Length: 246
Ligand code: SAM
Image (cartoon, rainbow, N blue to C red):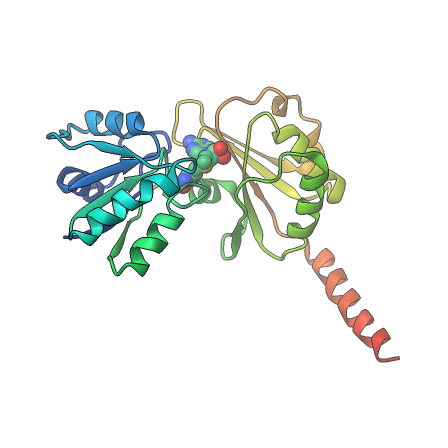
């Protein structure tokens, strides 16, 4: 069937790919990937031949140049399959502009759901999962990160962040400066050989030497503010509103 297919790919374990994803990779007219070698490798592992098809490169830095060819293939009634390096396209990954332009041009956009590090981390974090907010990557500079954290940590929701392993320790220190009792979970190398889930109060994790030498890929999950803090916020809002009427 024609249309754009956004295919989720493994975040570690190569067999974490759906049967439908393999079908779509097999039958696509045109393949596009954030990194063509990564998709090539995945197709090799699962025995999917290229059959003369090329894999076009489509990532954040060439998106504007590469999109017209993909949109033209869709306009011709073809199928285009897009994979980012790992996990679900568009989730802190390229694909948003492609999906939007394809939809606006009248093409069908199909999701092939599968792995995403954010949801894998939520599954193992042991934190409330009825309401969560995915925040992507925090700012990398200290001042910007502190302001950013202060804002989001006031939200009454479990928070999911992607963070570079080099910055986890500093990020935890910033979290602890705002709320040392906040439960934080560091989920590392999910679905891979060295998978590890470390959980504790932000104040304790901030001084945990294991956070200094982290390797691999990391998702951080933060608990929502405690009921007391949320009540404090509500109380403040009520008081401010009351004062405004005085
Ligand atoms: N689109 C992807 C998804 O759906 O998860 C995320 C892409 S983002 C550019 C890459 C980040 O995802 C990494 O820096 C890390 O925070 C997280 N990540 C990816 N794979 C992971 C894994 N196996 N374990 C822990 N975190 C992972």
